[in-house]
Length: 261
Ligand SMILES: Nc1ncnc2c1ncn2[C@@H]1O[C@H](COP(=O)(O)OP(=O)(O)OP(=O)(O)O)[C@@H](O)[C@H]1O
Image 1 (cartoon, protein in one colour):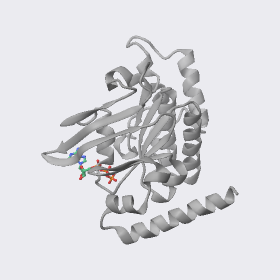
Image 2 (spheres, rainbow, N blue to C red):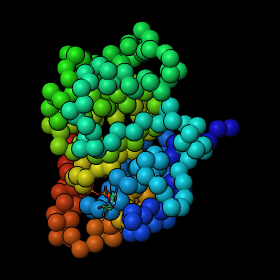
Image 3 (cartoon, rainbow, N blue to C red):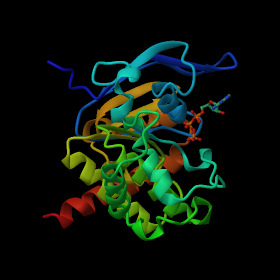
C-alpha cells in the first residue's frame, strides 16, 4: 500500500555559513488539510520550505513525499516561492508563466498541447486572471502577480502544494481568491502547506499548524496546538504584542462560533 503521508520531515537541520538556522526538525502533515508554518521573523520558516524542496543544502535529515524522495514526486509537488524572490522584470506574459506549470509533464522536445493550454486556461479562470493572459508579468499589481504564480502551481495539478507566504501584501480580493483556492484543492484531497504570518487568521484558514523557532516547538491540529503556552514558547520575548494578537484571535474564533450558531 502506498504511503498516505504527503510530507514527512525527518530531523532536518540547516546552517548558513556555520550558523545553525534549523536544528533537528521533524514533523509530518496529514493529507487533505491546510497547514500553516508559523514562527517569528528569522525563525527559519522559508529555509524549512527551501530545505524540503532541495533549494538550500541541508546538513542533516530529509523530507519524504508520500514516503518517497522528492526526485520521485517532483511532478506532484508544487512550490510557490515568496513574491520577492521572483524576477518580475523577466519578459514573459501571464499565459506562458502558467504554462510553465505544465512543463514538468512534457518531454524536452514537446511543446504544450491543447490539453495543457486548457488546464492553464482553467487555472487562470479559477484565479480570475484569464483577462490578463497576454499581459507582461511586470505590468501586474502585487496581488495579480501572486495569483499568476498560484495559477501556475494549480496548472501543475500537484497533490502537495508548498507556498511561502501566499497572503503577504495582497489585497482583500486576492486573499479571498487564495482561500477559495485552498477549498478547491482540499476538496480534491490535496494538501496545502504555507508559511503564514498573520496570527489572527491562522485558526480560520488552517486545519493544522507547525510552530517553528529554529527548532520545532509543536505540530498538530490547530485547535490543539495553537495555545498561549506554545505561542509563548515560539515567540519568546514578544509577549505583549502576542497577547493582543491571541486575544483578538480567540475573540474572532468566538465570533465565528456565534455566527455559525
Ligand atoms: N541564503 C542565506 N544565507 C545566509 N543566511 C540566510 C540565508 N537565508 C536566510 N538566512 C538567515 O537564516 C535565518 C532564517 O531565515 P528564514 O528566511 O528562513 O526565516 P523566516 O522564518 O522565513 O523569516 P521571515 O519571517 O522574516 O521571512 C535568518 O537569520 C536569515 O537571515
